[in-house]
Amino acid sequence: MRPDGKPEGLRQSMSWLHTWSGLLLGWLLYAVFFTGTLSYFLDEITDWMRPELHQSIPGPQTAALALATMQKLAPDATSWTINLPGERQTAVEANFRQPGAAAGRAGNQRVQLDAGTGEVLQPRETRGGSFLYRFHFELYAMPRVWGRWIVGIATMFMFVAIISGVITHKKIFTEFFTFRPRKGQRSWLDAHNATAVLALPFHIIITFSGLLLLMFMLMPWGIDAVYNGDTQKYFAESRGRPAAAAGASGERGSAGRAGRAQSAEPAQLTAIAPLMAAAQARWPDRGVGTIVVQRPGTPQATIELREQGARALVRGGGERLLFNGVTGAPQTPPEARATSSAQAVSGAMMGIHLGRFADPALRWLLFLSGVIGTVMAGSGMVLWVVKRLPERRKLGRTPRGHRLVEVLNIAAIAGLSVATAGYFWANRLLPVDIAQRADMEIRSFFVVWGLCLLHAMLRPHRRAWLEQLWLAAIAFAALPLLNAATGGAALPAAMLHGQWSIAGFDLVALALGVLHGFAAWKLGASGAIALPQRAASGAGMRIPRPVAQSPEKQQ
Image 1: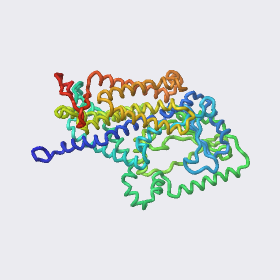
Image 2: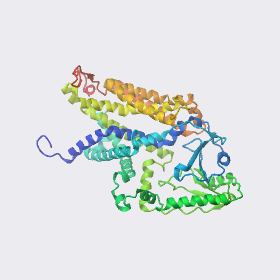
Image 3: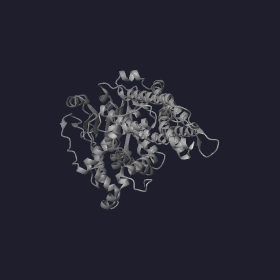
Image 4: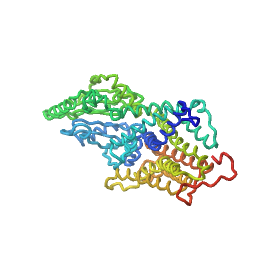
């Protein structure tokens, strides 16, 4: 209701909804956006965090060397899957299944091979970029189901905040082209509006697709009604397999192992070089990304070559070539399973959200859109504080609720950056052979984040911002030096050898260092965030009356 007793209009109601839906879960949404944006380079982060793989330099014989190693390492395996080095990894990753292995991923064994020699490498234990990816929608520090519920609810709030924000700002597209620096609250609002509109389609799609990925948990009633609560049957059919596929797959696997046992005479695999040449002629721009060998060492062996980095929204949409594993004769690949419209839409939305279809240029565009979304969320939280500075000056103190928002803003924005940089530092500083090393890295992340929260509580508001921003700037900017000093490929060497997964990480770390340093410098130069001082009483934070100064400084 308005002061005159009349009901508020739509825009006023949406303004209230936008403010409070954005604030109440803004800190969580910032963390989700921040870690989700980094997850676009999940593979590159994991590569950087395993420096033992950095000396792997691919060459023309990489595929032949990998196959030769697998013949020695797992000659009796039922299948080999060899992921060759590419734009997102430096070493060869090989997966194989031994006879009698458990179904699904549990039965897979994985090794890393040097792309130049074929030797087995022993990288350090780490979750790498997978931790940031899982934290993005599971929060890690709690049971997975609860984490997904919390992120799902926060995503709903995000969607509400986006829609209500568009309704609230009737001149949002006009204001997008307006930025008034050094105007206090006006500058923060301009920055918030500009970042919101600049990537508005991205924000809407990424939020909506995120809700779709969690829909089976957030809105399970349709699945329960159609499948009578049998979620396993739903997931089997949603992946294009009938409910009995798992059992049939197990039977086929048993039959395949029986066929191998009955094959008395082993058969030598054909040379891989002619097959790679044929694939290179077909895919001149991308080449081969994966080699799959079924029933190696038997007369029934087959070799499948898959296109490198195939641009497909739906998983498995890239081209494949199939050859007889003994003679090398081309074979006709089996027809792909028919995909229903619902499966295609679901797969496309998942592909859009994860960016799995993106080539390097588009992946960088998605990353930059994510950065803009992160800035949008952060600027909105800071704007909430800045808008209430005049009210606090009238009171002559900072209410406890406002102080709580200030502390959480520092810890959620600057503190998260420090914690993320600390996670990368822990990867290099912890002993390689320490027990539960991957968990220790993750604990380091949360310990550093908790210390940032404590620091924000104990230090004055503006000093806490400055100190944490400068710490994040130094920590990120020093990562390339840390990498070179702890066995990783130095930035110049990585660029020289085309190891862009490593060089890209170092370059982004330098950019983040510069970004945080610039933010700290601007904050220190402009005094854009007020500096409350602790009151002698426990009633709140006392703010000294402003002396003669410009309106901009008072903001």
